[in-house]
Length: 274
Length: 294
Image (tube, rainbow over all chains, first blue to last red; front, top):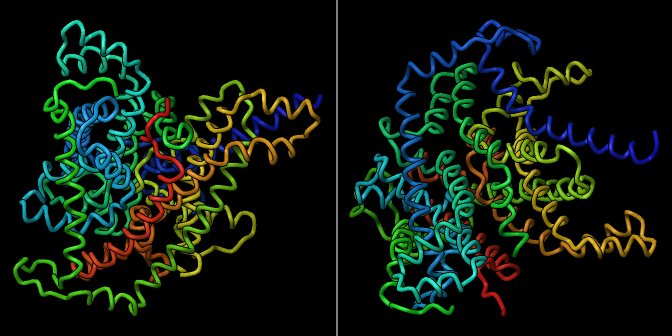
């Protein structure tokens, strides 16, 4: 073996090991969710076995889990759509227009993005209680929209900037109104920007736990909260918990496999373009 | 900046987003300040709050629990950020050359970043489980005695650190890799032609050229450390004792277990101050919305 092929071999071995480390724990979770109780408590880990869906059956047809699943879907999709609609408009205005308060808007947006959710927890709990938004899907969705707006605005802002201004000027000369310029010229050119923003907003709304725990009751609860409560309430039933966890990771897994390129674009947007 | 047409029209674009952020983020932040000056227990009406002045902040100075959790956060942050930066950067340097099938591997690398922190906590709680856990089993196979990962104060923080490294090293890897691949290839090639070996071209050419990327990644990770709450909530809930009680979790517990909303707000302000300082630093280095110089 010459030096070059040795290098390539080393490269592949390293990459495969790393991929196994990244995927392994998730794989273990899914495997565990497919085991019955006997296998679960066997002394040695069992890697090959006849899978059972009984854990999924128990989870989906008991304990209101279906309701929590629907809550998660409604809140995740609803907040994502509103956030993209409003964030896109604001991003366009910041990139292209001069207005009073623009500088403040930009800095406030950037700084607020960094605030830890734990800091927001107490005042949001107090305010939502006063406004009677707590324990409603509406209330949690509203917080997710607000929380995701800063990232959405600055991500879409960078996409607007890549569009040549001449296109809009031409449309205005042709008599288009501001909103027509946005919907007919800008929006179609930013589809991939919206895709990146959609993935990240949906992911956060879907995965978020802390505020969901504080702001929901047993009717409006989302999946992460349901899982955590199940974990503490009745000892640890790993089979069913892992089935819940596996259900929760389906959307992120699907998104990752179909849109990895967009995700990497979103992850690196802040640091690399700078 | 060329398009300036209808003044009112512009506000139609910004006001909806601005209104929601003001109501859902800015106002709650103001509220956090306001709450921190009152003694207000959960479940009691807002009118029954008692003014504390700066009482909570004075009390905080001598509150061992706060400083303990701050210290836990610092230790946790030190280990995760330095290990993730080193491993992530090293891997990016080693795996920089494109190979066939790179995109499928990259997809697998970002999986830990995409799944819910609650699930990350679950998975690691299962793996670290002293009896049923796979880690102890395989340690046993190679002759190491079972470790009380989550049940001993010494190992619980280590366990939390391991799970965080698993989740976030890919982030550093992806960012540094993107930075490396954005470098103009002529520069690195030129150093090769001038006789630099791999070490020299890495240490003297590549790393200095991506130092802004590294710095931003570093600062972003440091800020993220103060946000960690979900994984530790599931993994150990701060225990045993206070050995894994990160500051963010301590706020949650003060507010919703001890039910002291006012005091929890005061600690929130401390956390907010730390993160704001760090954020201003980030923006000084890289403002993603800075005006593009013509």
